[in-house]
Image (cartoon, rainbow, N blue to C red; front, side, top):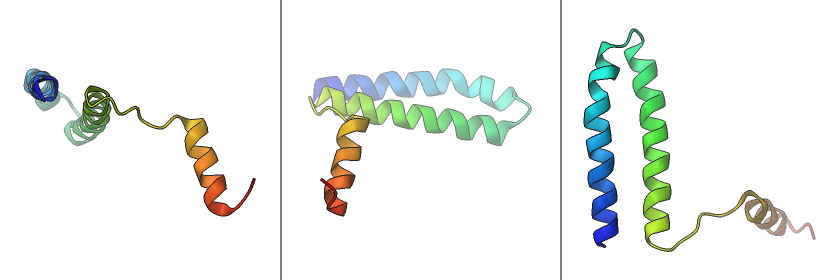
Length: 72
């Protein structure tokens, strides 16, 4: 639980520090969208790893899809 709080605080600090650069950029919406996407993905992966839950590997995901379709 403590690790998750530390991760969230670290991400908040990163976002606050980078907001100045995002606001001063030419394409604010585009930059903010890309930045938000990468921060969100990184945050989700970090939280999953801190809970000792590994995200699925691409091979496991493909195998799961084939099993759902009935292909063996």
